[in-house]
Structure formats: structure tokens, C-alpha cells
Image (cartoon, rainbow, N blue to C red; front, top):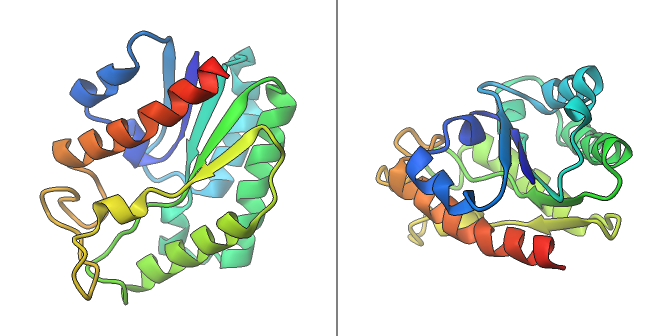
Length: 181
């Protein structure tokens, strides 16, 4: 079983590209607008509905950049999410995703916030059950402003069908490795 926990990026996952995981039982707990605090509240309130998945994929934090969160506070809550998740399902492997880039350029305030969180996450020493990946570079054009194509993120945040194809392809191999290990 694979469980996905996050915000609108997971909730609105294009069904055509989500099929890549169809040989496994999947449950998607993505909720539009969720912040790290909302995910913590969800985990505490639901106890993951008693589920004990093999892999839990977490992508959360971009909505913190819209609100009065600090990078330190966001990092602390992401670490709390991991701790609570492992308490609820200690045999699960966690695939923690770096927050995807957003905004018009690398100078965008929200993108700077997300990048700062990703740098902090990359430097963290997580438990052996936690695997961090940052695939954000895949969504950037590669020009000097590191713009995001409207073909990939129609509003600089939410993915298009093409964007979901990139996401699905990028993480499916990681998930398969975690399940098979």
C-alpha cells in the first residue's frame, strides 16, 4: 500500500498519470490548501485511519509560504509530521519530497521560501526509514530566471497534465525501490 499525504498538488493528481501506481493499493490524503499544521492535525485526528502502508509519500509546505510561517517553523512541523507518521506506522518507509518550485522566477518570495526549506531538509539527518528527494529542478526551464513553463504549472504552482506526468515518472521508481527493499 502507498499513502500520499499533502496539499492540492496531491489532491488534484491527474488520474491518467496516477495510474502508474495502480498495481498497488493507493490512498491519497492530499487536501487543497493544507499547510504543515493541517497535516499534523490530520495525522493526530485520524491516526492514519489505522493504515500501515509500505510507503508514505509526503509533499507539504508550499502553502506555508502564503501565510505567516517561518522557515524554522515549517521545518520543525515537517520534522513533527515525520515523527508522528513513524509513530503511527513504524514499519513504513517515508518518501519526503522537497517542496516544488513556484512563482514566476527564482526571485519570487514564495519560491525563495520553498527553496530555503528544501536546503534545510537536505541538510537534515533523518531516521533510516526517511528518504528525501528534491525533484524541483525538473519543473524549471533552465533559463537565467529559472522560470516554470505554463505547460507544466499553469499558474506557477499547480501542475498540468504534463506536470503530473513528470511528477509520476520521477517518483514512481523511488517508490518501487522502497517497496522492493
